[in-house]
Image 1 (cartoon, rainbow, N blue to C red):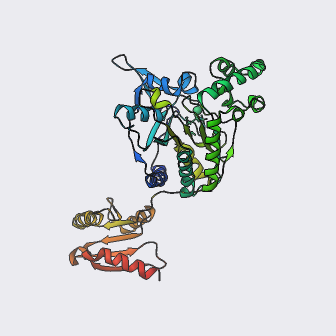
Image 2: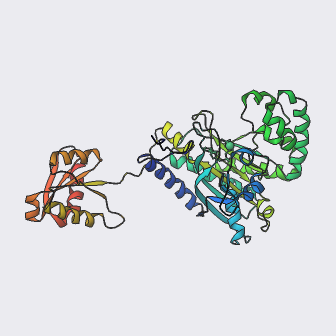
Image 3: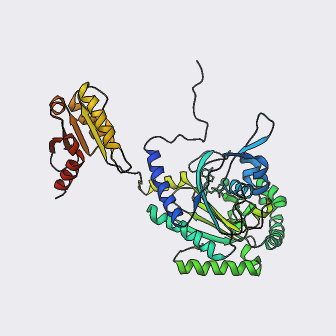
Length: 428
Ligand code: ATP
Ligand code: MG
């Protein structure tokens, strides 16, 4: 027997019902983004491998061990995108979008990382991300972070905490790196294999370790904020004051470093305790040198990415269901000439963007069973078309969610008016 075909491990199907919940949440996010002036950018899922190595950093979890990299038929090394920022920057340079003015972009879609699948961690996962280019001012950081705070309000999500930190300038990080190396070298035997390797290549990454055995050691390590350069310190203090002024609560987490190399100065994460180990729902930071590093004109920038799987999990934990709930009308008809007329009426009723969902019943003529299916479909209205209605040019309109059974047989062109009238009567 042939092996059963299944989805790739860590890559999920999104089934009907779930997809509606996702769409509802996405629409809320899109609304907030649009009101802040962000425009969508859609990019390829596949990029040249070198793009990610040069942006995310050679010595990072993503580039070292998580990328889906392959040679295509031309022998070019390609990678399924593990994140969105690199592609946005690549596209911005390629299309000359960085002209000095403020540029606000958002994106959405699947990302791919070969991680160990578990709750909140998948190999194909989905992000909504935003990037703003063209200002190095802390006011931009504050506006962007406040926008993410607005997400949770509009989604109706309580309990997310904001953690912020500053990674300082490149020079300040280099000096801090030396202090960290000295400290961790003194405790080399206590480090795990990953961290020992990082000790030489990228010691800041050790602070980002998820290994609980290292928590105490990391907590006692030299603190990044004490090594900040004066300008970054002023930037960070101003950001804190602006967040205070905006009423956005935060805590400063001096160990927050983020897993990607391109960040400098502001970094932030939104975390929750409600999702177990994978508690970071949204994360981002400044990357003022990345555009230049990839060959564009110097363009300061800040951005974030939000994990949709974790967001939808959190919505489920709080029993928030944002699925669009359109009105459903259900056509009940006798097969044959009645059904042919019902088909025409359904097509007319659904025309136009404000129209209801109109579902045809395509099964047998038993009206009782059709009404049961109408109920199961969540219909608010049944439109009944039997032989009598066909002969008279009428339709019977029945409310299915009304306090008492209410129905009226009316001319076919009066369906909309009758539904409105019956609903008004019912809610009296
Ligand atoms: P983590 O520390 O959880 O590994 P990360 O720092 O690698 O996250 P980012 O690259 O900053 O994550 O991605 C931003 C967001 O995307 C995360 O906060 C999370 O919500 C989501 N995310 C990242 N990796 C995954 C994954 N493998 N599966 C599901 N969601 C993910
Ligand atoms: Mg990760």
